[in-house]
Length: 267
Length: 290
Image (cartoon, rainbow over all chains, first blue to last red; front, top):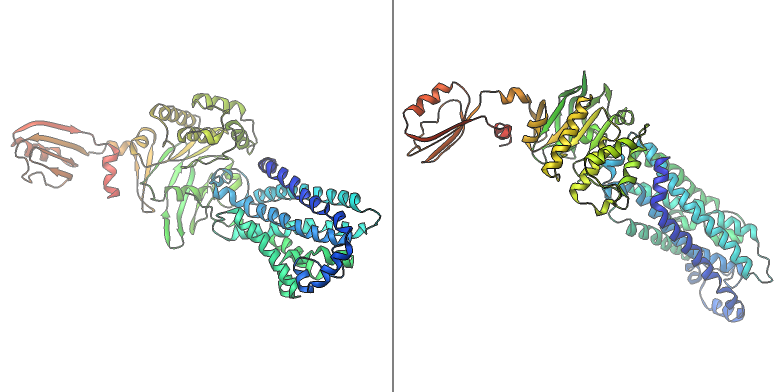
């Protein structure tokens, strides 16, 4: 419990910033929607002039047009998945490696506590932080939709379904970061690692959409929880979502095993 | 009873040897010195005891329990002062010490106050604002606050001024009188000489000698320094003489053996001065490092 509290304390600033800026980004995007709505025909003809692959790259499709409320929401949500991914990978890369990088491991690991408990406490602290941001995104999504929906009555069941993916999406990136951090000798820069993972996976999923390639889609959690798919079909794409969920599950014993047997570097 | 038992402890980092076949025991109530130059394998050996790193082969037993298998349990009674002190920079000293105390099932607040008064440590400063010496003090308080039965001190005095060093030695002696066993690693022999009962000497990862400090000091080594004129004639180069330095006006050497042999040589010489001393441990040990 003491480690959990301590870690949350260390993350205070980070939680505050992400909890503020991610929902802010979403609301900011969404508030442009009423402006677009006034000029639907222009957008329709603009969209028609682009090839489907091009639209796919930016997370749009003709099935769920971007000038519809949910189409626009899907697009916006897809955008804020990037910071969510970066935050989650950041915690994954950071949470264990920081002790070694900043040489505080000799302090923490010489205490009468097992590495399993350290991992568990830190995992829980990160999950708590991610959940706080998740809740903030959830609430702000629903609120902004209510504000801008006008006369439309969007399918809130599907919206909630999209929002429910966040926890898996975050944990998938967190797990990948964690696993990499205990597999390699040293995480030299958490920021570059998490940016690379967050953006790299996004690009991969964009290419996956252009090429309709399943191989790319298998590799990236962005495709596993594609908001557009859920908004159109009203359910998860389970064949893909299950991959992320497996990564999350498998990474726990694997990270534990690697961390438990790790030789902690010192100066 | 042995508090620490090393059983052929070996640690390789890939192909690089950290330590090899380390095999010695530390008895309950002892202050045991662990001597070697930087990079000899002292920290490797010590960090294995805390399962920060895992041995390639061999094992360490602490309080009769395997230090890896029963790591968490064993560490509850260990106070560890690492050679390089790094703490969470943004924290205040008192918060760090309280965090450290929270890992032990006892109230340490009185002891924290007491120790920081002795070490003259300002509890309200941030770690990042502390000098190297002050960080070391935090480390000392942090290592002692739960009154551990075994103290593992890895080069504890670096960065401390002589006055603080003395206070620290007094603290260690007190803990020892209360029953704590101490493993004291250092590359400075004089401090080991002052504090320890026995010493192990490590060189290139291997223990080369384990000695009783008192016995070592009482060994028949004498250090001779003679001054005069035209002394450089090689007459002093006899059995039992080591570290011989000959100059025309001054000759110095260590001698272990029948002192009469030296007296006979000196008797035939015209000297201006002669000095016969006990060599320091430092001088005795020097040949292990060469």
